[in-house]
Length: 145
Figure 1 (cartoon, rainbow, N blue to C red):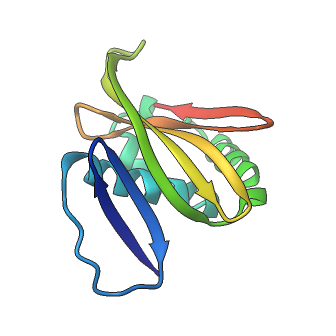
Figure 2: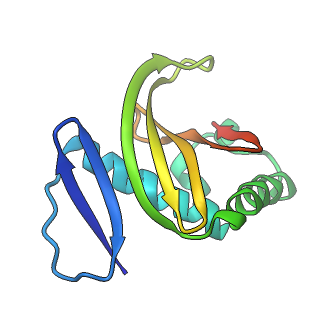
């Protein structure tokens, strides 16, 4: 599957497609959206790369059991919605987290094969993933470093 990036003024949409050879415009928001889409896929598959949250012990849950429980919660929450079909950047907001990280939260409307979700993906100024949240009709789950 190829990911198709469409740059629309003030809006970025990624569509899943079987089209090959697509040329994408790389903008700061498109790079973040690619990373956000990749992390949403990781949440669906359960294949998390904990090193992307930072090098310190307090960046991730302390035990393998807790990490597995977090991953499983996200996987089970997303499972009924199927595969991602499109991801639309709707807004971005920069703030300082309670832990002191300078963080930008990117808000997305995501269309899945069996429904839609709201997704927030956060990147910290140090380059690490700050966290994310997923909102469905059943509620919101989130993880942050």
